[in-house]
Image (cartoon, helix red, strand yellow):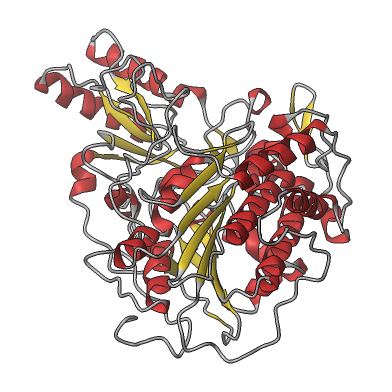
Length: 557
């Protein structure tokens, strides 16, 4: 058993429940023997998001999985599910998974956006904050669900039957909030030091125990993980400058290093341990109504940002997550719960250009610093002979806002010059004005065939989105200097960031694989149909997927 499965087991053993202590899971995590699919709805819905788990990663490693992923592969597999929108970031992606709606309707257009009319000095708005809290800013913020404009499946279930229990646990606050929604029984996320929740929420004993156990775990140094044979071909150093390289890491960690803990498989072990504790102590799946727990496994994203997607670190991360999920499913089996699992991702990811160029992707490159919003603003101001900052935004791509204090004539001139500036840049694929995005026709083709402006439209909310949206060309990484922080990222219009796997499993389900494209907005209506609830247009953007022949045709059409 590798170190991370041991950490899950160790944490689970230390988190006790009034009725039944969680035990270490050492048995193989194979699926239970096949049985006829129950005619009744599942008693517990488990929705797992693996942050930055692209369809490319899934395809690369699926034949090596032996734990939780292997079980899910015996169910219903959609290898090409699309986060169809352009803003392929954590917050927008998580907002689609259980609302069944694109970010244009959820209101979550990005991880952060600019509101130049905000009352506070900091005009950046974090997607899961309440900026009205006095003294807060987009870094030191108060976590809130206020920006999510629509209900989640869990909220709909609870509204239909108040006996439903809803729980959300994640490695990031925005994952917990966007999958859980507004009204939950329990919501907890890792805040960098401990599992936390909304101010004033009582801390259950299992959270206290988990925090104590994780604190003890972090206080000990962590030895390097054993390297499976299938990871050895990825074990190759990639220099990225200033004496720094990635590609050979094995997650050795110094005692007390919380940052390294977060960007390692250990943190997923902690999230699943807390999720298992909630299932046990709340007796989820054993009440009078179907319950739902959402789990945000965030470590894959931190690993992808810190080391890239094609190295030894990602191989070890996914192997460890496979084992951790296998242990988690084994615990649910032990408890005798009839549960249904859906697993997908908030977005994909792109490897660092230094390794991509070495692997026959010659156009892989880092963004030109001349494309920063400040540089673009200065260029436009010089052309128009205006003073002050005219354009606002966080990077050289995505949403760009024009200063609202300009006169209408000035705004028109700035918009024209800014579009000309961006469209002339060799690293820019397209730049769209607000008017062009709003005029874009609704897509009628599958998501791979959507035009770039249609992808932008799926992320566009008129009250929050920018005046311009910029799309970089494929294989351009919007991180200019990899030696000062993250080395790789996501967030583009392209399919390596849009395409993710979608897996469903329930004991006795007749497994099959559907290679045609589907969308992540299809998850909520599909799960709803399995519990006798119909979600369809216009209430949601997604459609129900027939994952079992016994599903009611009236609920899933």
